[in-house]
Image (tube, rainbow, N blue to C red; front, side, top):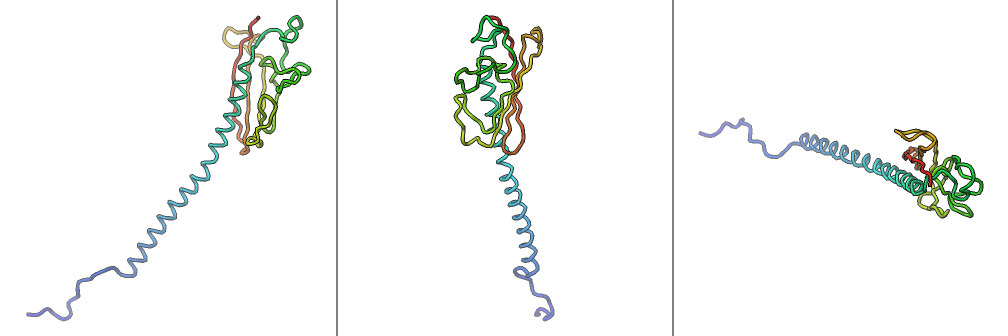
Length: 172
């Protein structure tokens, strides 16, 4: 016996509809992956700006912490106690009188970061930094002998990075 002529043949290959559906699914997947990667690439620059602002703030904090915090101004050891803020003639760049005490930095600010010698750091021209210092008690240190220093660095994205240090005064 032979097979009936109206019997359906076994299907081989894919239909045009199946190919179009497959292409749509693959294209949707590719678009999703590419958009996720482009979002990650756009956001990867932000941490760099934050890290640079943090480095600026850390550098200024280290410079401030490197200064001795004494009761008297080293340039006038018999004069009055050293006050918050720079004395007349004192500048960070040090010509003719450099900052000699952590409290001298209070009120200091810069738009476009400069090195301690006063030279501009060209790659950080769009960054800014400022310092605020105030007398504050901490633990057993009375307010008159404690200094709270807050350094704020801001990058071109406008997001501030704030670092704080505390110094206790000693009498030389």
